[in-house]
Image 1: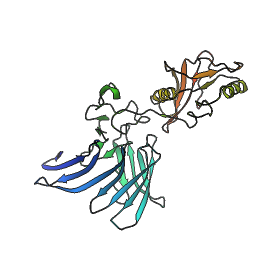
Image 2: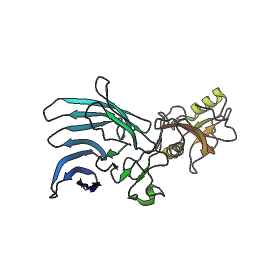
Image 3: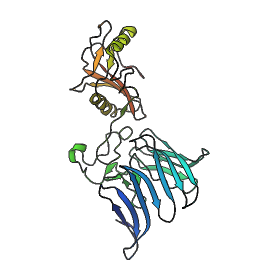
Image 4: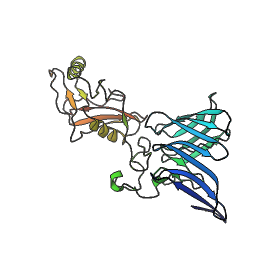
Length: 306
């Protein structure tokens, strides 16, 4: 890659492994020889560590298994020196907004516009925090975000190349997401919908494994219909619909055509009826709240409605 600024030309090289992960970036001198190397280690498809050869290294820790939302970074200034743990504070879509040290002091902070370009960036000491949207790493030499299988340009809010999986990732091959506040694309392939609230995959309220007798008891006690999710496909569909909403917004959508979910009505003797819609809310934290409904018996939408 050649970066031209005025009369100055600087050249950079990138090295990838067989699965397509970038394992090294470096600058090239006038003779084309690499120097100023940074190497990257991976845990599956997540960045695990970066090492600036002969200098410092950073080990990344994430908020959950399988998540790309950063929780902490373990820095070592030089081989043999003590480690320092720095903590990430992220916004609703998992992009870092602040980084603090063990004493709670802010060492780095930034603000973003909707599609990820910076409004400001400030550090109280050299920490060079390069993580952006989940799965993205800022290349300061180009201003682009390395997004595993593609590069993302935050100035235009799009990828600079078409989707490697073609229309399976969406009809717009360059689109990042319909809504960057609630959707993520950590691999640069396809966007991810909102996750269900805790309990929906288990036997809690509205949960997939809630026993029919328990669902009927809730409907009878509260004297109103009670919707219950019955498949992971229904939860995935609901998360996709909720991701189109603004944080805090709640709305009814048509039911998944192949839905297995149910609605129990007061006095129904444990016999459910088929829902025709779902009522979902974007919680603003990467999750959604919601339940299936029968539009002929469901009440109106209330803010923070349960």
